[in-house]
Length: 141
Image (cartoon, rainbow, N blue to C red; front, side, top):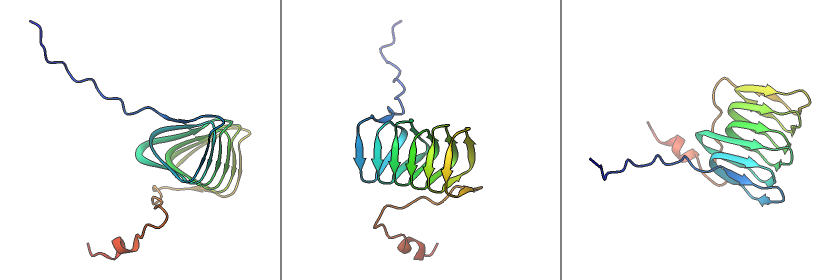
């Protein structure tokens, strides 16, 4: 009548990473899942996974490159932005650098001081500094 076996609860995909206002991160940052930036990052921001997303509020500031499948910008970015799927620039977005995107949504008031490059294929992933990729390319298939 009563089944003692409980069905396992589906595990959440993970809580979003939040970098709060007043927080500064210096150095490269790699994340998976969702990230929300209200603070400041001085370094490269790199997402792992095809479902990763990076969202920046109007108070958020990035001094460095951003790479993620889905990116929403509402603040300042000083560096290149690589969105392998979708890039959304809110009215408060200020980008000093090139943007690379597959799908772009740009609200009135957003500013880009750099090249806007539409890509039909996902760009090659960035490698961490000091990683030698030439050895893998030299191996026969």
